[in-house]
Image 1 (spheres, rainbow, N blue to C red):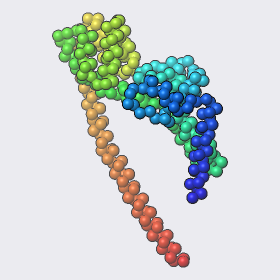
Image 2: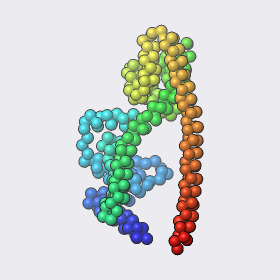
Image 3: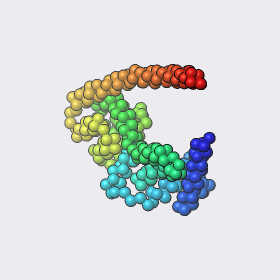
Image 4: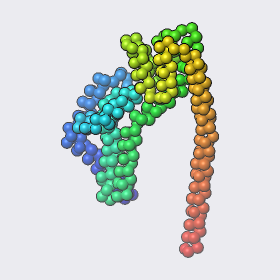
Amino acid sequence: MEIVLQILIASLAAIGLGWILADVLKIPKYPVSKAITSLGKRKNRKTNPLDIWLGDLANLIASKLRLNEYKRLQLKIDLDSADMSMSPEQYVANAIVKALFIGVFAVPFLFFAPIISLLIAVISVVIYFSEYRKVSRVIKEKRRRIEYELPRLVSNIDKTLVHSRDVLGILDSYREHAGEELRRELDITVADMRSGNYEVALTRLESRVGSSMMSDVTRGLVSVIHGDKTDVYWGNLVLKFSDYQRTLLKNEAHKAPKRVRKLSMALLFCFMLIYVVVIGQVLISSLGGMFG
């Protein structure tokens, strides 16, 4: 009962500290923030009060942040590649705020439960790094999905080049059947090609995706634009990408038994834990009866 009371007091103290900081830092009240945020939101989309409040605090911190120029530029490129519409400062501020939201609970626990306070502090640090690396995870997943589709794109290019060498037409017709990530990239590339230089548009596509497989595709398309004979190149690329796709499918197939083994081990551990607890209770009761 005493521990529950301490946790309750600590939680109330943390919430009170948060409100005091919000007042000192002049963070807008929830109704004002909700009205402003709703202007940029689509209709019928629910707004989380906590997200709005944390967003206001992140905006305040972002206005004070000064990032290294190289770090800022690299982060901006990553955010653009991940289709995350925010500034590098705001991205870092979001990670800081989410970590602080958990870390603030470490302050009241510090006075009567230092171990719990240390644990909360460690959790907040883990949350910060997890949020900071979120853009890398998004880019990696986006690249994986695009690369999964490239064998089909290459096969389509190889077949179409037999009767047409119109690169813009090939990409324009294929994007209607592409997945979400690849279609978005092809939309941008087709628009660039229509308004400017074909090679520059393909170079930008290669840079945005950041994949060696996409580099092979764009290199071949540039050769087609130059009028080179590329039949052998695309034939070899079809075989190379087909091997890659088969490898991916095999890896996915091998993951299933591993998941089953992990779940089986977890289930076995739970059963063993139950038996240990039951046997322990029986032993304690027996020893209590003997010495009683």
